[in-house]
Image 1: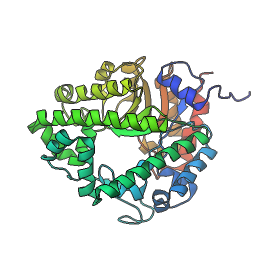
Image 2 (image 1 turned 135 degrees about the vertical axis):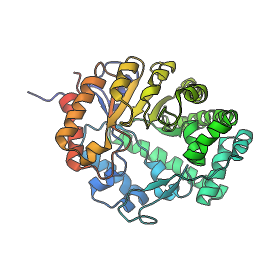
Image 3 (image 1 turned 90 degrees about the horizontal axis):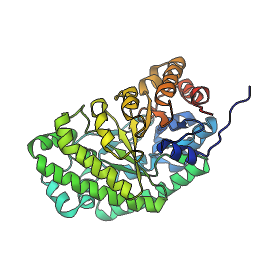
Image 4 (image 1 turned 90 degrees about the vertical axis):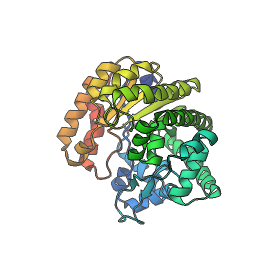
Length: 379
């Protein structure tokens, strides 16, 4: 029996999947991240601080597993020399604060104050982020601008490398929801105190963040030519806040973001870390086939398929625990269930639950990729 071959390009397959149209096979789009360096045999200090070694490592994963056809890159946002200058949250890096082969860390800490909501509302998102970078990273406006310009160059380079590998860019630009932006800069604890104590001010601030994010992502999409955006939204689910408050404060902001991006011709991939199971019915209020839901294993992905089937594509959700402490047979069994249930009828992007862990077992990653050929073909 001869092996079946791909009949679509990586880009055609991804676009059709998002549009809930027939495809030859399931899109394979794990978030490889720091695992690539371990696969390539380099220490994480090299992976995080040396752009060429980082990119070469991803090339090696693709060479080993050609079935990996869509790259949800995030590495220009993870590049250590730039994360030490700009970016929402302080970081600890291998080779600096951490051992040479440790995973980098993001540290939850209050940087902006309650008073900074007024700065945000009066002067906009960029002024607010500039204040954050100055306090968190000690960088002045000129240093921040230089880092942002360098990040823009790496963004283009990364997308071009992805395409040269024959992959689609799952997203070509990166952004965040207003709750994520504000909670990561204020800290989770302080932000949710604000939500309870000054909800009107928080809502006003979230509108400013949302409108600023739409304009920023639109400009970046024009630059990259890729009109799909990663939207981190891990901090507004029912795991953190009541459905009543979600409905009043967060859902209108989510609608504003998705509809605003739709008007710019941009598809948001909603990166919904944390448990969104109770929030899933609300996602039916978003425009059909104009967004993707990406789940990390905390949300019941099978319930998501049941509720959102025919409305949007679903991306996920091989758990970090399976890839690190599970066996290849357990990875294979869960992949089979994902393909048979979530992949039924299309609209499924096969991925890791958030990032592939740095310490994933190589034999488990082989099982992850092998499952696509075994269970993921429609043709």
